[in-house]
Length: 469
Ligand code: ADP
Ligand code: MG
Image (cartoon, rainbow, N blue to C red; front, side, top):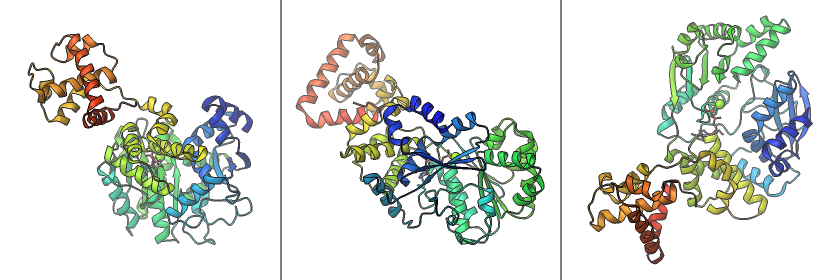
């Protein structure tokens, strides 16, 4: 089966990427529906987890229904995979995280302590829940306007002794930090109260556990276990939309925990009211505590996240590259992170420094997917803002240099960044003739040749508007 997964993946991602990431992988063991795959370095594990794991899971479980989960483990950090191993080392040091909480070597697998809890603890949390990603801490979470509310609410919950609101419901689009915040809450709780049972798992996993319990006629154990935890965090609740018996079970677990004053944290991609296929009584329960949403990231936040991640990786990025990435990859943080990882890995593999040009090359597919075609209206607005003139001056007949020059620049950028023809562009600029547009394009090119400042100004505008080259 692994061979089949591999051959699918090879078709999917191409020979080169396949050789870099899949060749070194090997199946380590299969254990209660979880397939463990080992890789030689932590860096590789993180990379694969970020970029391919979901696909691997989906493929594998479609080939074999017994496989419900796939985990990547690191077999040997010492076997220096040169710079890559070093990079992972740096990342670990930068985090001030000397232990290897997520690492299970085959020999150590049994004793590997889970994050921040004494080794000999009865590990109900590990039995029921999923492992926490050691990188997903509050310290590593960059706070900005779009996530400050969700972050503050999570912190409150993590630091409180009794639930300040129950449940805490976090929602927002893909890759905006829901899972990160949930892990951060769990980490913090386990650190401060090592004796409490803090269980984190996805709604999907909750469902599989439940179904297995049904099949093995162990539902009593299941109920008992889940109803005795001190804190329960369930991720991606939208997954159990339409799954009635699982919802029912969750509902009862939920009530029981709330009655006992135990904290529950949930996440979903939509607000409780907007998830279709969720029972009303569950919805109303979910709405009962605090509902906090994560908004789409802003340019500033993305910049902050990039700087923080680069520091964790122990690399220095030219500011041109960070600005470029923050501007171009606006869809979600996971993609932004993936892009950064790719650039860093590439530079380390080929042994060349990171530049804007190599970044664009390495990311061309991602950039194309994120390419938002800019419109002439956007160009006019941006250029007008930049030169502090009115947008209406883009259409007006005024010929004063202070408005005519910006207008010419806007025409030039329209020609460069959109696929509009000269007459079309002319029409958008107050019905001007196509020869006027042609003249503007020539003029701007010519000025750029002689006037460095001017050229840089135009280049800056072009970059702000998303032009790649
Ligand atoms: P979600 O669960 O909302 O889909 P995740 O929590 O998995 O998103 O986040 C995706 C990736 O982006 C993770 O690697 C996470 O660490 C990172 N990330 C998201 N938001 C932030 C943030 N504000 N600061 C640092 N990293 C973030
Ligand atoms: Mg998530």
